[in-house]
Image 1 (cartoon, rainbow, N blue to C red):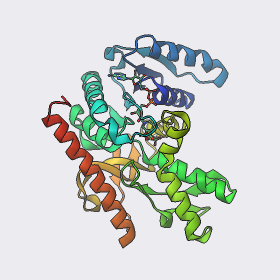
Image 2 (cartoon, rainbow, N blue to C red):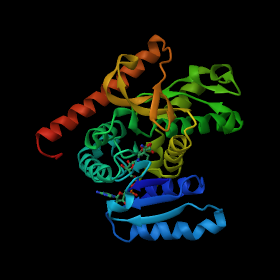
Image 3 (tube, helix red, strand yellow):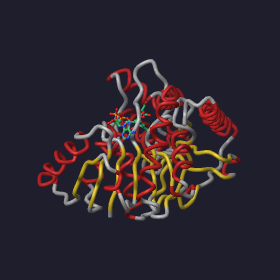
Length: 314
Ligand SMILES: NC(=O)c1ccc[n+]([C@@H]2O[C@H](COP(=O)([O-])OP(=O)(O)OC[C@H]3O[C@@H](n4cnc5c(N)ncnc54)[C@H](O)[C@@H]3O)[C@@H](O)[C@H]2O)c1
Ligand SMILES: O=C(O)C[C@H](O)C(=O)O
């Protein structure tokens, strides 16, 4: 089995390493436009394999022929944001990159499943979907696994309990309008509102929504350890076909009364990609937050169409 990672930068290299360390596929191929970089990072990781104890073999390339017959492709190619920027500011540049890398990848792997990571996430997933010609269930975006991981880490820190016992659901677009759902968050099976007061939950939700920006302000570029681990967890669910229930940007076709775009929803993830979108009951407040987030994703899609009409996105 082969996994391809497009973009061997901070996130891409971390995804490749996390996938390799799970020792579940024969090959991981990293592709980048910077010749030497994917090859060098792959070699460095191979040299770490006797220490970590994995047999997955990693290679780097600039040639998509080397990615042929991949089972899963993770797209991380594109610019990260800098302090003062929003993810949406990356739209024009990254749309051109994501479209081009997707077209080159699918030429050699018509049957793969694509996980998009490049930002702005929900719209880049749509770009990859259109460029791939794949059915919608075989294209998805990684955001919810990362955003819930941040949310779970902050809750664990606040309560002084193990991160392993925290289960959480978060929906909506991967931006400041994302919708963490405290009502669907449990610690050891006990709902979050029984552990923390409203003000503390509000602070944790706020920090989660700004979690990407918090790191950008600290480092001058965006995160990669948690994003890389999150994309690798989704890859594992597809490779092992273990029916994980995870939040991801999936194509909605009437679910939650939303239609025709990608947005964060709970899914069952397996070898066939998005095997099911789970529709949970939302109260009026949660529903209003999801609608606001969906409007934001739709606005971004309208911006993409405008850029296409103006010739800025080819
Ligand atoms: N979905 C998420 O939750 C999430 C999390 C973190 C980062 N991101 C996004 O992931 C993307 C990558 O972030 P990063 O920190 O790894 O950036 P980075 O600059 O470290 O790496 C990006 C890589 O893409 C490569 N690249 C650019 N154009 C290419 C092309 N046409 N073909 C092949 N490779 C190409 C670059 O050479 C570079 O190595 C950004 O858009 C960032 O916003 C998303
Ligand atoms: O914040 C970013 O720009 C990168 C990513 O979307 C994140 O949430 O870390």
